[in-house]
Length: 496
Image (cartoon, rainbow, N blue to C red; front, side, top):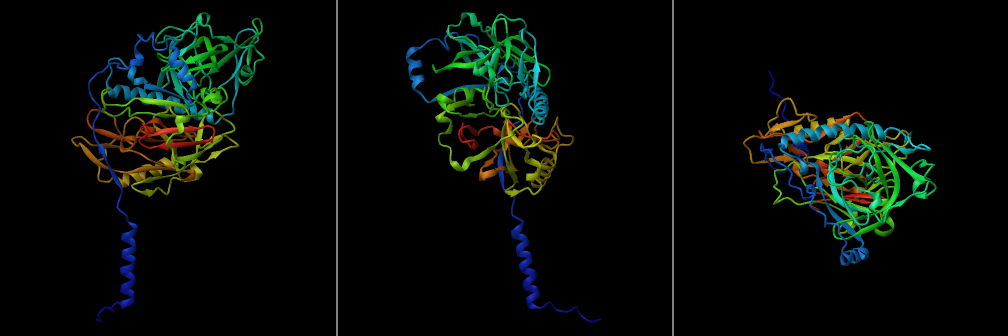
């Protein structure tokens, strides 16, 4: 039998070059360190200062502060997560409730974003018509702040929501009101309350402004996806913020008939893109820019060491934000409220995931379906099913050294058993946006503890609802800037 032919020198060189190229292509997975602290099993109660009712003087008249604030170009205030109002609950219980609310909200947003703006009639003389635009579900609202309403100011705990436009709160006398924290605002005791006539331009912005013909009073109604409603007089009022800043003649819904809406909150401060949102209304004085920074709600940080979440309106909202951090806003002609952006791709371990395709994440302007929104009230980022499946598979492959926990948890299908480990190396995850902007996520923004045993889950999910949502867990620690004047959004890391 003849011996096998010897390889020529050129053929051997080609094999060696191919092997070198293959090794160069197989780049090492980029990782970062996750502090694997499980949820505390202890039962806790509210510690938030906003949960207290002893704040009578918080918005009391302070002429010096008011004069300083009048000249300022910025309003900044603290916000708290609704879990700060919890009473006798464990972290695992709070997470379970949060994920349940989250599913309802995501469903409402998908339904609203895929449908044209509609109106619904209401009771009262002359009827009422208002847009059904909010993504909020019953009992929803993740972040709260306390403002003063009227003159003298009545403290009011308000939900902040980028998925809503109309500013409203419960008002006396109540035909139907739910339980709220603190006193119900009574417009009859306010010197700055101003009823709006049916012909007022602000009334006409309510899609088709309702009118009480007997009183010639503008009437508003906002209906939510679960059938909950708030209705009453549409008026103007002065809003006061801690530190003395006052904003006069803000159009607000004074709700005398409210059903099944929010836990504890007096009402809602809409931060959406519509013309009646709070940022739009204060734009002449502060511009249409605002930013927020949300602190980590899933970590074991104690109140003594954790920083407060904040919202900033005005020139300071854009401070220290590089132009390269911005991505253009995308407009959905069928839904003006939400902040759409173009998510161009996602990287895992330093490598772009091929299956996260633009075609799955692009907005279809003709139908209003698809696209990606940045939302303060949704917790978990949801991606169109094909994009999520590709991301999940890429993460599982890059995290092959971690021990999978079978069965998943709630809406999460990829979980890991990190019990007994203090620091764990995990693959990096980065989100890439149109225009070159990038958000490199801290590890606690995508691997979160779900119990006290050491189970951590990949905090993304798939959706078949048509619209993808970047949730507040992934936004934690970033200062998210909404530049309404420049029609762009930025994610500034370590901005809190």
